[in-house]
Length: 179
Image (cartoon, rainbow, N blue to C red; front, side, top):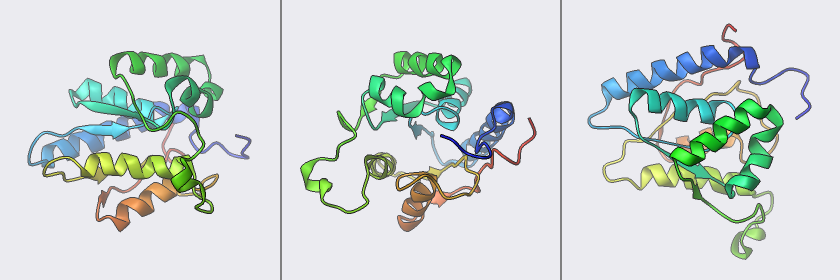
């Protein structure tokens, strides 16, 4: 996307990775039982999250709004070959669960004004976590706090989680971390 300033400067990837690791370690220490993660596979925080969880021995589930080849086009490939390689490596080790075959909504949702597959994906991700037996769901966000490019972004996810009583950690702001 053409933005005046990067919302996740590439030079801050190591700092974001460390911040995610710190939060995951803190959450694991405070958990009453084992923990597991659920995330998409988008460039940046999603792929970093899965990687850090693997390093810490935390199982994750890869949830994709679209089949991998289509998801790649929408959420990964514009960031370069390194991220594309990370995405395909994750798909090999974590066979993805896929929400739908296309970014068109099913007929029973298509009439909702302003509703998108990305909003549906956010609800699906939350529902996946909340459906677990005795779930204590916590939302970790890597977000600069700015409005997104439309419905279904990080702001939407934060609002959905809060409305459902999910614990939302203070966001890791990728623009405020040293490179």
